[in-house]
Length: 373
Image 1 (tube, rainbow, N blue to C red):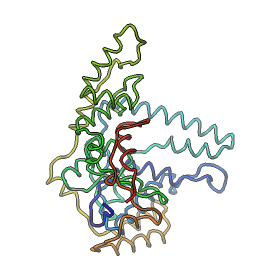
Image 2: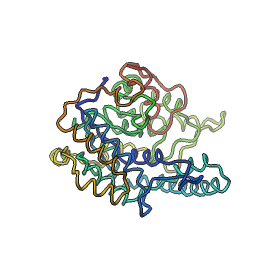
Image 3: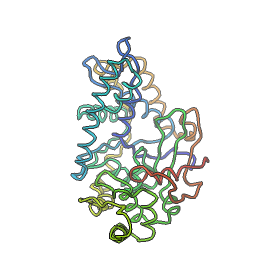
């Protein structure tokens, strides 16, 4: 596939918002050395709004209809992972302050990106802007990437736009990555090709992702992705892998190599991927997937007067949006950005992992995006 014109894409809003906030940080603040962030007159962060504003226009101009999907309440099993992330953000904030005191602005900017916190108010503003622009919002009951995948499985969207590989584990047919780069090409990962390359079905793929690491449970100590893949192919599922590991650990002639976590919640994790908390009511979803004309006056008033947007930027953006109204755009996806062609997994055979896999389905993605169209 070399174009998305005329297609609807489910967008993981939370992931995009983090990217926008990081991308709009600078090395100066108020004309002095420091980490600068886009804020309105009241000090509220606005980088995410700038990103949504321009990204939505880019989508529309290229004939792509975006469904912005927002996270709901995270699953209880993710609480430890979220606590861990919170601690990492707090540590990053401390390192940022230390780097600023030392004048290490590059390090300070890096730590500022890691310490970003998205508030409910920021999410509310993001939803408001999307609606004012005439695009649609869906609030997922739980994980946004799971709801995106569900929209794709129901053929209400073509693919999922996110950097989160878990969208593949949740079963999205196509994963679309790289929209945040103006230099690198868009990457399309075809789940069917990934499964064929791994010679697995979706259930086996989910087990592989759980073994390699997910947000819901710990991994088996000492077991890397290559071993996980090998053991899973030889033993069929995680239960079989655990039996194999126990046999190896019971061999007194060999050093104990693998450590099974005390609370290895693989069954619960597997179930979360197979049966996520998502909206499945087609009629309800179709009522929410409505694309309309932008609300010009309210958008101008709110962005310019309340959120500090430059008047000419808003006016120009509105003009671009109005030109998209009713337009049957046949722009190729490789024109979405000025540089690069589209990269797709559909032109290459996906093979078993030979090196490190990241969390979840990252190995599949790494192996599924190797050839240009």
